[in-house]
Each structure stands twice: as structure tokens, then as C-alpha cells.
Amino acid sequence: MQRWRGLEDIPQDWGRGVVTIGSYDGVHRGHQLIIGRAVERARELGVQSVVVTFDPHPSEVVRPGSHPPLLAPHHRRAELMADLGVDALLILPFTLEFSKLSPADFIVKVLVDKLHARAVIEGPNFRFGHKAAGNVAVLADLGVTYDYEVEVVDLYVTGEAGGGEPFSSTLTRRLVAEGDVAGAAEILGRPHRVEGVVVRGAQRGRELGFPTANVETLPHTAIPADGVYAGWLTADGERMPAAISVGTNPQFEGTERTVEAYAIDRVGLDLYGLHVTVDFLSYVRGQRKFESIEALLEAMGDDVKRSRALIEAAE
Image (cartoon, rainbow, N blue to C red; front, side, top):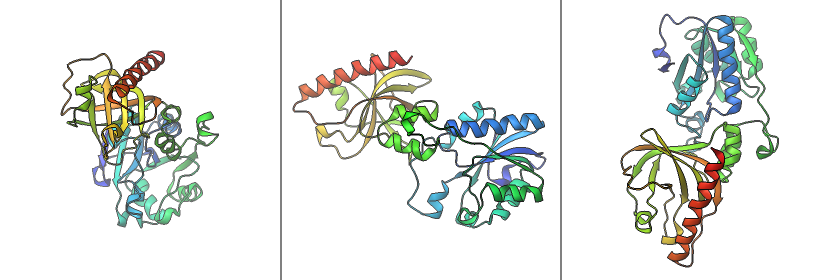
């Protein structure tokens, strides 16, 4: 898959293609449906498929300080899109000037002059242009003028976890924030993931017999609610069952939220400085302060047993 950052990176001889535009944070199952249809339509027409997305998130530019928690960084989204068969990914730097483009100017500048769109595939709630004035009806009207077709793909509807709401990044973020990582996985089509470099913490886990990888997560990452989770820790390409703790460590009067993963049944791991990923499978229990270190150790042992059982059942 080709990756471009900015309109100037698009090859001058780029031919016509099928395009879809959106933030696509998380590349959840609704996004997969839209992107998959764009890939399918491109193959039907014998042209290339292109996904257009933005960096930073448009809300941060239009309303500074409102950046939503991210379900996946751009490099992870690119991997997921490549797996769906996308031919090219265009990441547009989103600036205040860019946000002021009218819907028509946006279409001409991006879809017509640079990407030579033959077709555009979007979800029903797609908005674009200054103050989100453009919608799929405007997109289709402009398509008559600029010779591209428009196809609108309805999103799947979630099951019990989403209460009948359409699949969306907003819903997924809410579930993650509530600690419902199983519900989030239902929408994502995979476990929710956080990643970052392993840094040195207070090393209390090592002292207690449960050495953890303290993950310095990427900015704006969607972090699950405080608690203990079952999941996986992946380092150097090795995926290991893990018991994961999220929170401030109230047992020791902590104040900073951390994500720490204990690789179950592994000893002697040295992960400091490595970039790792943590995938959340199931919620185990909430975070709490225990009456004694002995009670804490007993709970941690139980956390590991329960996590091991949940992971084995899932594999």
C-alpha cells in the first residue's frame, strides 16, 4: 500500500480511483464495511482504491483541547487498511486554513484535481467542508458536475453491547472508557489495543513477585477504565498472555494513571526501551486499595489465575 502525507506526495501520473474519506479512528467493523466496499468497487472498475484521512484530528484544530481519545494511531490504521486491500492511504495535514475550505473547494482540491475520483464511497453521516456544511447529498450533486459516482454504505448495527446503536468510534470510545473492552472488541472486530515504550516505574511489581511492563502510551490514546484486565502483551513479535493493570495504584497512594502488563508464566523478561502493544480481552475487576500487602498479593495471584483462564478460553 502506498502512503502519502499531503497532496504534494500524490504521484503526478496517478490515474482515476475509488476514494473514501474519513477519520477512520479504530478502523472498526463499520469502517471496514465502507473501506471494503471501496476496494471492491475499485476492482470492479479496474482502478486503484484510496483512503483519505486527517492528522491531527479535525476537532483539535476547530476546537483546540477537544481532541478525542484515539482508538488507534495512524500507523496502526494503515496496517489495518492494508489488510483490507487498500492501494493508497493519503493523510492530509488538517490546518485551520484547510478547515475553511467550502465543500465544493474541498472536492475540487482533493478529489478532482489530485485523486481524479471515479467513485466515492461513504457512510450515511459523512460531513465535509467548512463547518461540516457538506453531506452525502452535496457530495452526490457535485459528482454530477465533476464526473464521479457516489455510493452510500449503511453501517452495521451493534448487538447487545451497543444497545442497537450503529457501529461508531464514539460508541467504541465510550465502551473503552467504561472498561467494557469486550463490548469495544465487538465493534472493532478485534481487542482494543494500546501501545508505547516500556519505561521504568516504581518497580513495586518486581518486588512483589509480579514484574510488569510499564507502558508509556502514545498521546491521546483511549485508555480503559481503571481496573484489572486479561489480555496479551506483545514484544519483539512475541504475543504473551498477560494480566493488565490500569490506574493510579491506590495501594501505594499513586496519582498518575499507568498501564502495566504482567506477562503470565514468564520470568527474566527485559522489556525496558522496547515498543510493545497491549491488547485488552476481558475486564477482571475494579481497582481498589487492600487492607494489607498480603491481601494485595492474594488478589494479584487470583487476577493472574482468572486472566489465564479467560485467555485460554478465548484462544
